[in-house]
Image 1 (spheres, one colour):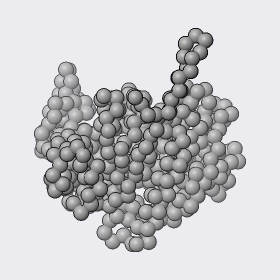
Image 2 (tube, helix red, strand yellow):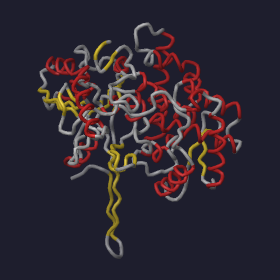
Image 3 (tube, one colour):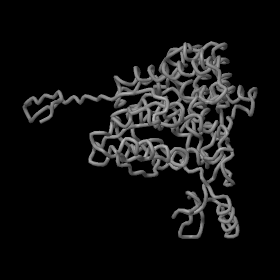
Image 4 (cartoon, one colour):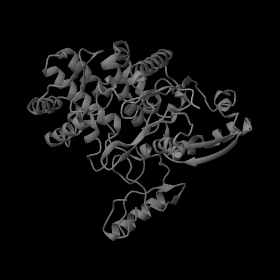
Length: 441
């Protein structure tokens, strides 16, 4: 029998059921989660005596040995598997409909944004998070020391999520982001050697307050039944334009384009003053985040609007800052107003570096989890592909290469090394805070 709150009422033609499921889970801030002195993670597994650790190749290459030593120290039987976290969480929701898991995020987005939501989803076709479920972890450990080995491009990518929540819901955090922007990105949120205590303290406050604010907003709406969501700022048009480029945009850059455009729309309406509008756009630019892209055009704007109206039950529900630190939802916006705002936004972008385009804005192997590429094999495969008249990446039935990756120096069943470094197949060049392809430079 279930001890969950429920009732069954007899009706004239049958029965009516009301059921309420309690969802309970914890977050623990813990630098050095895999240090043997910290037993908190191991204690979660003691009653089972075994652990299945699922990581991507990047994390396994850099931390695999430490993870093995940690669980060996606590006499826990460890099995490791390499898989992307999104697919793993989705599998936990699907397998036996409710498989427990513990989350240890290793990126900025994972630590301060994805860790908050219980949504477990994967992309399908050209649609973001189209397949998935709602399935909470038992526990989430937040270890910001992982950021020491995170590419700068990924630090920037996650910074966008903090702009999102603070600009619409927490002015004090936005002020800190504005004050310490470059230092936070350059020092991996104060975790790199040489970072000042001031920057470290500011980063810790930003992270804690940002996570807390998102939890307060999302906890009453874990299954996203309510469609007016403050944290959906930047997520009105980005689900469409993020996957439009041949090499998709990084999520942080896609939502930054959406947020910057939405801010211009709000400014046009007088909801955001010129000073605040300039301040917000300036922060995106200083962070190296995208505010525009050539393929974010009127056609994509129209298609994105149509798509989100279906998702949001016929209303636009576009979250915009009004003013910075608070939020308003726009519903009464015509396509003519949206188009006019886009044209003005693109004109404004001409006054910003790179016409508002971001730094390292496109997905590479640090997003997919496979940065360890044997250059000799990769070059040989590229030469073979070029000779065959095609260079796009996994060997298909027609002898064309599309996608694929090289793992631990061996080509997998899908073929050649991925397009890396914003479309280059020559290897990861984004920089990794002193690390390149998982090895200390």
